[in-house]
Structures are given as C-alpha cells and as structure tokens.
Amino acid sequence: MRKLNLTLIFFFILVFTISCSEEEDNFLTSDTDYFRLEVGNSWNYDNQLNQNSETIQGSETLNITEQNQNRYRFSQTVDNLAGFYTSILSSGEVFKQSGNQQIAYDGQFSIQLEDNLPAIEIPLENVVLYDANLSQGNSMSVNTGEFQQNINGFPVDFIFEINSIHKGFLAQEVINNTTYEDVFVSEIQVSLSASVFLVITNVPLLQEQKVTTITNYYAKDVGLISSEVSTAIIFEDIPPQLEVEIPDVDFSSEQLLQDYTLNPDS
Image (tube, rainbow, N blue to C red):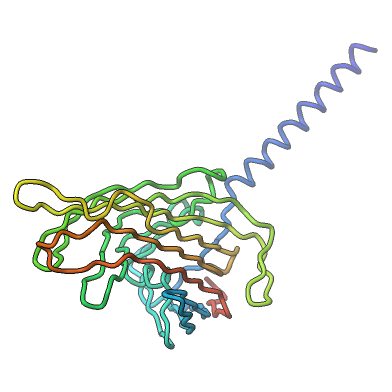
C-alpha cells in the first residue's frame, strides 16, 4: 500500500511539473502585439526638445499610410515640432517577424548639425526595435557599418554601431494621465566615429563614442506610448583645411502619447 501511495505522489508531481512547464512555454511564445500595424492606424504625440538652454514644444500625428506585404510605412503631420524617433520611423519601413514577437526597421538615422552643414545620415538595415522573446539585458540586434559623407568638399569616413537592447517589461506605465498595461521597454544605442584623409594621413574628426541613446516604451495592443532621446557628440579640433567649424551637439527630446485611433479589426 505504501508503495502505491509513493507512486501516486510521484505521478501528481510529474503532472504538476509538466503543467507548469507548459504554462511557462505558452507565456514565452504568446503573440502579444506591442505595435498595432495596419493602414489607417494613427497615434498623436506631445513632443518636446531641449537644446542650447531652450525648450521647444509641439505635437504631431503619426499615421500608417502604406502596406506592401508585411512592410509598413509611416507619415507625420507635424505642428511646430517633429518627434525624433517618429521621424526615424517615417524615413523607412517597419516589418514584423515571428508573428507579433519581433518588429524590425529598415531606413536611416539622421543627426542634424548646424544649418550650414548636412545632417549625418546613418543607413540602417534590419534593426530590431523590439523582440519580446528575449530576456531583459539581451541585445536584440547589433548593426555595424561604414559610410562616407561630403563635408565642405571633403569626403569624411564614418564608422557606426547600432545596438538594440531588451530593457524588460513594466506591469504598467502612466503617460499623460492614462495608465497602459504590459509595457515593453527597449533601448537603441548609436556609437559613431569619423575621420578625413588629408595629404598623407587620416585625421580623426570624431573619436569613437556613444552619441545617441533612444529609450522606447511600447504598450500591449497599442504601440509606442513614449520615447526618450539623449544625444551628445564631441568633435575633435577641426583641421583648418576643411574651412568649416563643426560645433558639438547636445540635446534631449521626449515624445508622449496623447491619444490614438486603431482599426478595431487590426
């Protein structure tokens, strides 16, 4: 009789263990949608830029305007100030992979310099914006590359690295007095260096440094509810041959979701 009882206990423990394992697996492979992508969906944001001891505020509406198979394009309707991250989204295409678990981006990352200088345009391909399957602290994607850009008639060589990091989940986040449940947090880190060839040698213009950090918050069944951007670029002494001054860059910006409109079938 004792032997039978021990067998039954072992059986129930085994069933319980399998049941818990199945529940964990279901949680890890759930198809939660953290960015509702469908033509016609739109999000309204309050935007703020802090630069040179000045604060600029504005607003915008981000719309999904095109769909080509699984790829989506955005447009912005801006009142006074465009958002930094939504401008990145609008310059390229977003696409989902692994159901709703991962969203990635192809396009470009632009950093504006002084008005008389061209913006730094970093080409991006398959940068993961979020991947809910990974664990907190994991890199979701790492992209490296080189590009050349003309500054005042001189070809400047840039080397970049884009690191997209899983920053974990929040049970809830309050934005503009609205509480959003189940929020995924990600961070995009942009590192950059630059040099120019003069006479017989390469002259550094920008030592390798992390120039931009973008922290994004995505709410379940809604999309981007907040984006925080910090950019600081410290240039080397510019060689006189370039006949141009390139001032350092230092600004921060924020976008907060005001309201949104989603297709009920999306």
